[in-house]
Amino acid sequence: MKTLVLVFHPDLTASRANRRMTEEMEKQTNVTVHHVYEAYSDEKIDVAAEQRLLEEHDRIVLQFPFYWYSTPSLLKKWEDAVLAYGWAFGSTGDKLHGKELLIAVSTGAAEENYSPDGNFKYTMSELLRPLQASSNMIGTRYLTPYVLYGVNQLSDKEIEQSAKDYVAYALNSKLEPLAVR
Image (cartoon, rainbow, N blue to C red; front, top):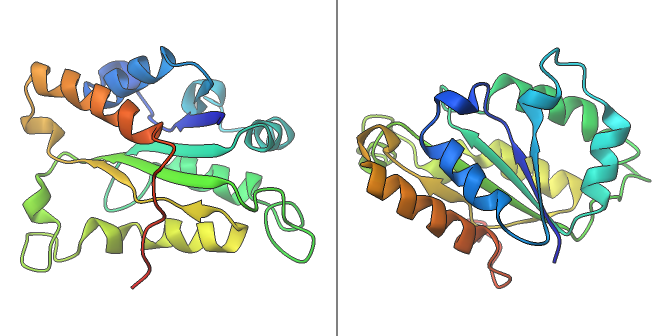
């Protein structure tokens, strides 16, 4: 299985968690790590190149920090440009059908904040629902997301372990699609 990890972090050098997650993933075989903010610092996305990358891989991982209950801005712009009608969806848009999509997200806040009784009133699954809907639209299997909660409170040792846990999770060939409720 060939895996593409699209890293959407505007300043990876300033990140503890996403930087280590990325570094650990870069050591793996059959994995392509693509630093999207680095590739498109001008935000001029090479749509054809991005589509080729997606076509060459079986599992697509969107890795990003969770910002204001959403994705970083370049990820949204990437989706709008790359996941085009006639290519990713529509009557002839089947290029991603059958591929797997995994969301790998990190949060500054602790897990207990992401519940109906928590500070944010919604679960992470609910907040990631637009990505799940997009997955449905483009015909990918939406795998149960990997979420690293509370990175601001994690020790360096915990960050190291989480990077290893992330790789093991993301490259697990037996990951199941998220159950729709």
